[in-house]
Image (spheres, rainbow, N blue to C red):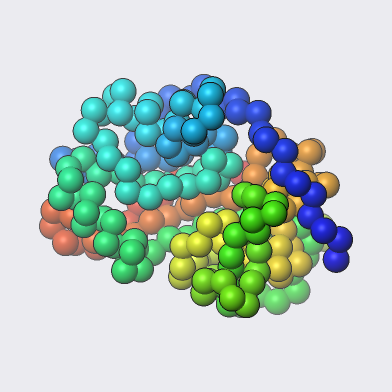
Length: 221
């Protein structure tokens, strides 16, 4: 396999779209993040626009709980109190929160379902890439085919760990990179306007009631 090319610094042109609220109460804000918008402000000049800054302009008490990659769309939750932030942080840290994603991937996957259990680590020479590494952190993803054509497959992905770029690297390792992925499939991404990866559902315990709640962001592709 050839060495990956170095990732060029990307131009940031966040979409000019209104905030999409999926749920709002005194403890939490659940949003549908558009693709191409950072979850939090970037460190470099010109990358201050983010979902968090936009949300805090409308809801001053919004607090970060977790993140989605800039190129990934879908459901994301914010807290409105420090207590809720701590509670929700534990939901993710203790892996009680459950997430599903939908992706369009290159090629026709023959099997109907499976599990990818491959440890991941940072590829320091080619940052921000991640890579499969026997010495890396454990990572596991379940996948299930939703639909397929001769050239691509639509899959539902259920991560059981939350590693950086986990779904993108796992699908690449399976031989079916996600369509539109500028980092892991750059040679085929230019014809697509976005990464075809969407956080479809998020389920966890509500910080105020302890009830199990689920949220869904409609598929954009």
